[in-house]
Image (tube, rainbow, N blue to C red; front, side):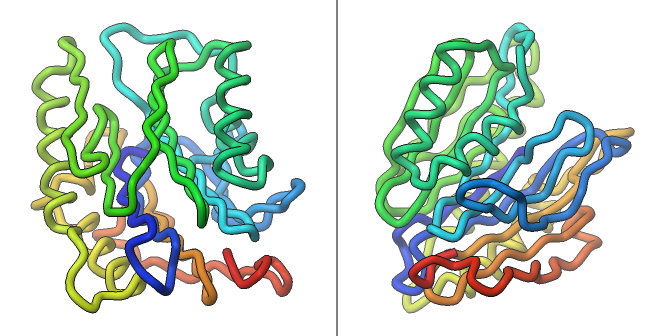
Length: 257
């Protein structure tokens, strides 16, 4: 995943609202969101090559999502980053997931990533380049991508020299997305997610990409709270409408996604 917009503890009707585009090789197979076995079970799409996922939620209201992080030198990972998302989803809470993440990166190497953890009580943005840097998120809108993002109202970018021009474009896109998705007066989570879907599908914001063999492969939106939602577009959102994902009876715990 390469552009993730998170509204955390902004709206009374949803502790967490997430809209995200996944950029990937066009020929890399994946599976759409479904209930995944675990304790607790989660709803998430699946990377059919390496396993794991790039985004998912649990019945307790935990949302986990990952983006690749561009570095000056490629890191050889011992394990897919998508499997980290699975690990964190099984933790049950954002605080517990952070402990799982810290333990895992202490034991094994991974390619660079930015990983977001959020539930009703806590939210974190975790950036990894061989060392893990954890930022506790404040209530608000945050945007994260390949070179960092706008987090806690501040631009936090690390653009590698070898991808300076493209990295600057990604940083500019994140800034524009963050400005566009500032919450509006009397807006609820559903209205914000509708706007987020429009922004992430509009090419002027630079988040929906079309390249030679690589581009935006899918779009996800998740809302936790009394009336949880997961919707998914299995294609670039400029061309593919997001369809509701059926959440099974009893999936929600205490009315949270």
